[in-house]
Length: 298
Image 1 (spheres, rainbow, N blue to C red):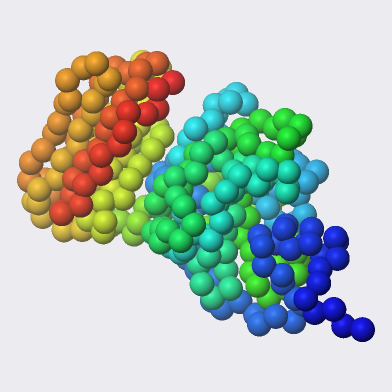
Image 2 (cartoon, rainbow, N blue to C red):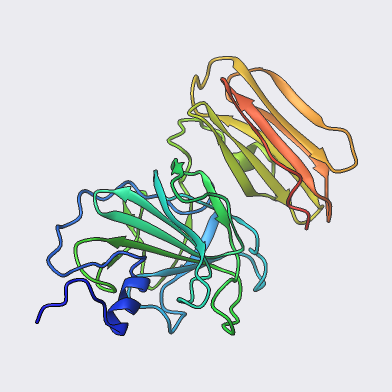
């Protein structure tokens, strides 16, 4: 007898692990692979490892940076490619993913971002490549105590879990399994010769960023040696031509500092001491602007 509408307990578990979609062997093959970039802001360097967890099935990657276990807690996670958010939820006791965002990129391809400390997008949201979707964390199922990291997966719909987990490819190059340190090129296709680290100077590293439509991207950087923040807006359109561009940084309890004008490549740098203090930051390029809440208070 065929029970097409019923799931056994084992099949239900498979359904859960597959992200809520039953994937039957022989399903139509996935289309062309999207041009995936690393799930972190432009020019950040992260170390990925696919063999450091007994929970790994095949080609998943756990990402960290920094010299201590908690160094990257709260760091920005961005979309590896444009798509639609189809899961944004805490998985609770279902699996070990904790706060999970799943993005459907079309053509049978999707990406998973697990253990997030927070989720910045909801189900149904249309996200662009490089858009912030959450922050690195250590959420999981009850009793599963893990150190902060991003668990990242690429899956297709052409076979069943876990065989549908694919090798990760970033900027057209396959990840160097089982472990590799890479620099993110998730820069929204910018042809700007300047990086945020070059603009802000030695010792600064990107901790957050936000897209300004197709006109640019505003970056928040931090210098651990002196406790200073820096904000710069890097243009991605009309590069080399003077257009209205701005960047600002506001340390909680102090006046906002802004750099605004007709710039060919970038606005800023705007620097301020903000150790253990919340900051509000943002900028504008073209007709698009970004204004953060007070955040990054550590």
